[in-house]
Image (cartoon, rainbow, N blue to C red; front, side, top):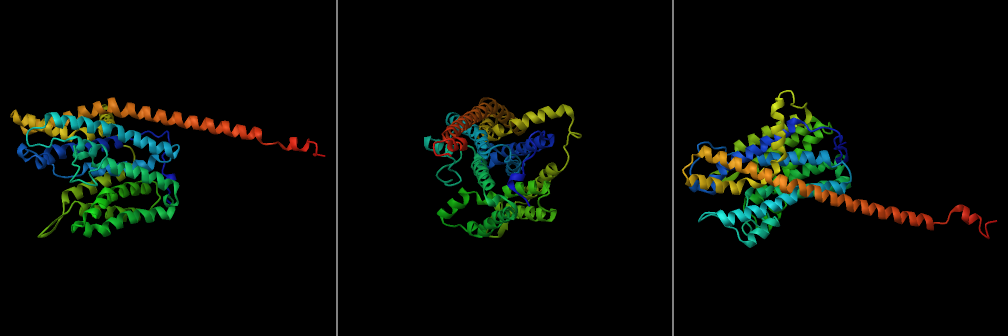
Length: 392
């Protein structure tokens, strides 16, 4: 019987190098996709690239991995600390990244490019794009994953405390999380009223399948669902992903087969990493530390690389640099900015916020102990009652 509270891995377990390699690989795919493809889609004046990777794979797989590790870590320690830890890890670097990117775009955007105003800054800090994208444009398009992750971690914490995080109910919930968005997809694709689109996109209906895929991998790798059940869930997740990436044209539905195949292959890799042995025998020892370092700053790189990277492409293009040099410079800039964000904001903010949480928890525990001690002293003992004037 699969239960959310049985997902936790042993605290002493070391993280596999294979997980770091997969995470680093996914972020690298995001970098290449934005540098070689989306850059020209957003800014055609940059001109064609010598090499193009037009497949949206990396960010989707990062959400799958995020869901998987939500299941792994949710049983470690108090539930409130788990939730606060996720918020403390995600939110401070995101807020800092928004401010830095906003400032860069305000100062460096060339004529004709998006130059955000104060309202755009507030809308991005509040993560309003999925709800009202026409009114609140992204300062950086990569940030669409952040509110979805925060919602997913919150839902996971609530499920952990409820009956729906246990046994058959959890399996039913996974299927509902797939079938409900699929059932409403024709209406969404047909151009529904704005209020409907706001609710559906704001709650991320079209991305739920990625979280289901990650949870299903955890259930299967820990032998809580059968292989047949796991494959059925993953196939339906791929179908949902194919529909999400499709475009309706007068000639019919056009599928993004490349991205769907890429995500399918990525799901297979994530499942093999989750259920199989570590790749430490095939990853050279000298390569492990660079992989771990890059995986450790991957969130910062993800947050910082895109919008500022496009400014780098524009500047180098104006100077006559080749497209390969432009792409390399954008990637290097994203890595350096991501490293700085990790060192200066993500890690210290996480330590500070977790220390604050632990201090408050310890204070509350001392108050409860003191209150209990007072109640114990005030409670009359059996001996005292028996020895009173009416005790005989």
